[in-house]
Length: 640
Image (cartoon, rainbow, N blue to C red; front, side, top):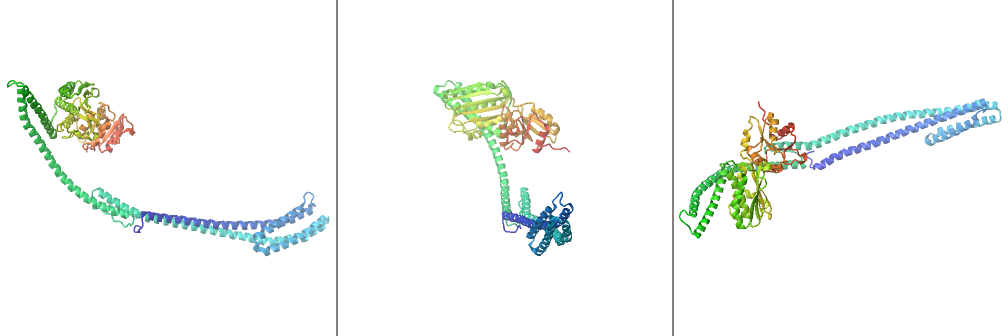
């Protein structure tokens, strides 16, 4: 069957056609059987009617003799028996006519019966005439001598006919039973042959399809396991044969691509190692150059400040103006050197933060005051508002100031008219948020992330080398925060700096707060309710888990990238930062995209984000949570 050069469609049609023909054959046989049995039944009915009519005629002959005897004995005092004799004679004639019409082949028999009946009728008439004349003795004599005798003659002719009819009925009944057995055997035999033929055809057709499919399944399993030597050999000359040939061709192509990819991977490994060495060399070079440039720059700025202060005598206005330009240029150059040095330290992992308590409002006010003169020169309204800022934070004051200087400087640099407004808030949310809004040209959405990359700018007309925003975001994330952007072309921009109140609560500190044991799995809890993490720790401690709370929702992504937990337990309803944004950032970051994220929230299952790997409703039940952790491969190791 597999070697037949027909499509699978035609082979299946052929199988269905055979099945249909078997059904048609069964139908034809059934119709024939029904027709045959109907004929037998009709024949039995006819013979039964024939015998019944003959017995009825015999009864009518006997009844006439009986009625005549009753008439002679009772002289019809209470009943007219002579009338009954006339009725019986009429019925006898009707039955005789019906029998002769139904069975014309027995014409000689019917003629004999009619002749005997005529004689019987003639003697009956004579008896009736004597009876009506009042000669009862003559009537009785004629009845006994002639009429009754003739009735026996007529009965003697009917009895063999009745016996013959009954014999024919018995023979017909035997023939009916024989036909019934024969036809039943034929139906059973045909059904058995049909079932065997259908099963054989189904077996042949199914295995012609199943065997090649199983071979291809085994080959695909081998290919999935990395064995590209798998080949499928099938005798099929249909679509399955073509599929097997295509699979073999695809396997050969995959083997070639795998070899090419393996060679490319080896080259990439070598290239990555070279790039790593180049990056380290670049960082060392930048650090070295920055230090070398800082020494003469300090001298230039020091002597310039001394000259402007009149240490070596008074200067005229033109000399003061020239030295002022030198001073401003030197400070700008020193700022660029500091940025390059900071970038090299960050990339080398050597930049550290120095947390200390301070009032962030004072820093914001100082930065705004520092840039107010530039705003006045450009005719821009520049102010700041306290919209609920915390009165004290524990952060790196110098780095916070550096970030704000970059944000405010950029806003003033790219704004030609309108205003720049700085707003400090976040105390009610347990963080420090500083927003810098301007009425500048705005930034296209496709450039929102690009401007945070090194040496990238939204526009190149205002100078700079494009390091300020890149360094600012890295510094913010080092302190557990982040910088985000809202902007559209023509609608201005808004940069939002979000920092925790205390950057000393780093993930490493949080890890040390709970003792670690062998086989434990780390879980990161991201929730604005501080009671959730301790509750989860109590619920899961005996199951081999260690729960660490995120410093803040804003720092969740950074801490997940640092901690690499087995799973992240995330609440999506948080006022500080929407959990949906955190989930998108986690899944979009290559460093955290593979970490399972289980949503623990009061939202319905239909409102759970599609990117989530699971959902447990609040109040939290430990069994569903443990089941989800196991399904996501985050179950702890079993001791022993």
